[in-house]
Each structure stands twice: as structure tokens, then as C-alpha cells.
Image 1 (cartoon, rainbow, N blue to C red):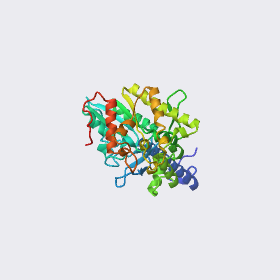
Image 2 (image 1 turned 180 degrees about the vertical axis):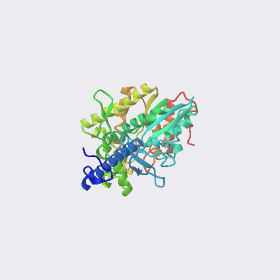
Image 3 (image 1 turned 120 degrees about the horizontal axis):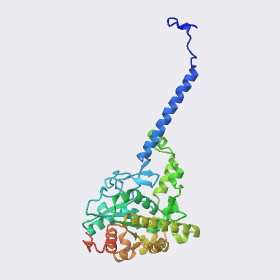
Length: 376
């Protein structure tokens, strides 16, 4: 047996020495593994923090400070909290939302730009006017979002609204373009056994790159998160609203959109039963309902087509046993088209006051602090 000789290293030659190529390959594999772990970790962190591409939101009124919106794979988009001085901790146009104090009665008003109040100051929105009319112990939170369809509103209520423990939820609908929102969003569809389910075919599912890390890395190096043409397409689809008259659509599409609206309203009603709050709908007519020349409106639509969806929603509410208020009569009695802003044809300050008065009288007749008879 040969004994080792530590003083003569050549007597015991070492094992095989890795070639330089193998060493480089090993180091490359280790580097790739580290990068892969870092990439996956980055994806998980960005998903956990809901960090998605953000953009400056379009502003309807010149001179008003712009807000920022963030893409949202569940809701399509949301306003970035506090990105404007009238946006709160959750990105809604109101004071901060928090736990409900003991003894308070809480109302959530949800919907689109009419509820958000894009043509008014924060203190002139329908929810804020209603809160003033109701007085203590009522508080009314504004959860309206510009550009939302009823599908997005339902999902926002589930994600943000239910944890606020509402006593009442009031859904503001603008049927003139709400059905168009359902068609372009492609967020929900009627489920075979009733209710609604995700389609998996909305514009973000189709167009947004799966890798959040790649988008943010690109944004660090360029002004864009993705191809500019794709960005523009997504942005226009999310923020664009267009009137859609059901009676002008092919029968299959008309029936599909009507069934989807029915199931969305039924889901609101189911949530109300499950969580113990009252649910009601307010239907807002377009300015064309009062004979306004459609050439003065940014989306010229004949008056008979602009209002043709309103009865459909009212009939669905009646079928489902949902208390619904149509604002046509109340607005007509106080000036009709004069209650709409001439720039964007949303309700102006006077229109919001009239709407809040009608809501108070219909849904809160037993509440204190009746609404004033004149504009402040």
C-alpha cells in the first residue's frame, strides 16, 4: 500500500480539474438561477403590491389637476389613491374611508362618472348633497368612478365596499352607455347556473404582458410600459364611453347584454341579502331626454335611441324586486337640460342637488333633515 507524502504533492496527484469551459457553464447556470429566483420574486412582490402601469387620466374640464389611473387586472383600472387632492386613501373622490363608528348609518353610492361628479366640486356631488340632506347619523360615501360599467362597479363593491359595512348601497346607472360598457369590457358573462363569472377575455387579459417585471424594467428605460400602440389601444378602450342603443343591435347581442345586466343586478341583490344591507338603483337619463339638440353633444345620438335603454333597466329591477328611482320626472320639473353641464353633459351642481333630493325623498323618507327647497 502506498502511503501519502504531504511534503511531496506530486506523489498524490489531485482529482480531475474542471475545464475552463465547464467552470464558465457552471457559473452561468448559477447566475441564471439567481436571476430566475429574483425575477419570480419580483413578480410575486409586484403582484402582492398591485403595482401595475400607471397613466395620467383624461380630464374633462380644462384647468383641473389631472389624476392618475393604474391598470388593474381585476377591475381593469382604478384611480391611484391621493394622486389628486380630492382622491382618498382608496382612490375614490371623497374623504378617507375607514371603520364605521358606533351609531352611524352608512350609505355607499356606487356607479360611474355621474356618481363621481365630474362636472361638480367635491361638495356638490350627489353623494355629498345626499349626506347633507340626511343629516346625523347618516354618512354617504362616494364610490363613483369615471368610465366604470356596472360590471366594474359590482367588482369594486366586492373588493372595497363590503368591508366598509354599509347599511345601504345605491347603484347609479346611466343605461345610455352602460350596456356599451358591458360589451367593450368583456369582464363578466352570465354563468350557466345563474349569476356571473369572469370571461377571461377582457382587454387586459388579452393585451397586457404577463410579466410585471418586464413592464417596469421597460418603463425604467423608456417612457412606456409596453409597445406604445398597444398602450394607446388599452387606454382608449378602458376610458372611452359610447352610447349603445339595445334596440339597434342584432337580437343575439341584445339578448346577451340584457341577460348580463339582469345577472349583475341580481348579484347586487344577492350581496345585499347576504351582507344585510338595503339595495336600490337610481337610473339617470341622458340630456337628450329633454329635447336637447344632439348636435351639441359630443356623441350625437337621436333622443329616442339615447333613452331607449332606460325602460329595459327599470323592467329588470321590477322583475328582480329591486327598488328603483328614475330621475327623469324630478329633473324635468327643475329645468331638464339646464341641469346638465354643456361641456360633458353630466349633471351640474344644480342637477346633483335635484337628484339628491329625489333620492332622499324616495329611499329615506323617514330620515331627518329634509332637503332644502332652494339651491345654496
